[in-house]
Length: 178
Image 1 (spheres, one colour):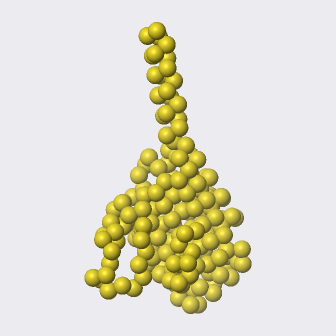
Image 2 (cartoon, one colour):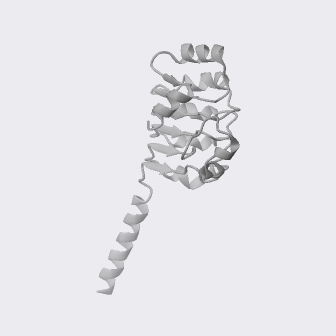
Image 3 (cartoon, helix red, strand yellow):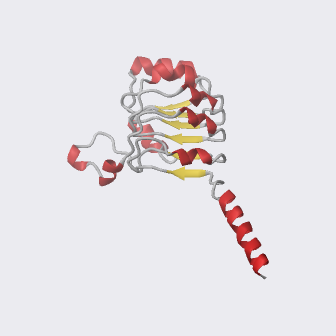
């Protein structure tokens, strides 16, 4: 009886341990993060990773900023380990402090949606060579990142018609559920 109970407990624990790493979506939006926790990279089945803001507000007076804005993440760089999330299809990085993307981002061959909006110091034109290496990219959100009208034309031409570029606040709000 004891042996059976012990065996059952060991089996239950091992199944629980394995299943806990089978999450396909992790939402770490608005958690005041400055880096991505190492534990995220243990989830090899991850398809959607949210590291942006829960609520996005464009051009408000400072007094109108929601409380949640004070909770937003401040990730300034992505670790090279981002390339380990090979099944990732959606990566939400809006409202952070990114200045560049690691070369390893180009290893995310399944990535379809990349949200870089509101990373005001991220020069999108400088990131084009990395973005061009994402064969399944369908939506690139760059609203309020570092680019101008001429840059937008360069970005669109470089990535081609297969990638929908979301660059205006109106488009972004309409696409926010993607």
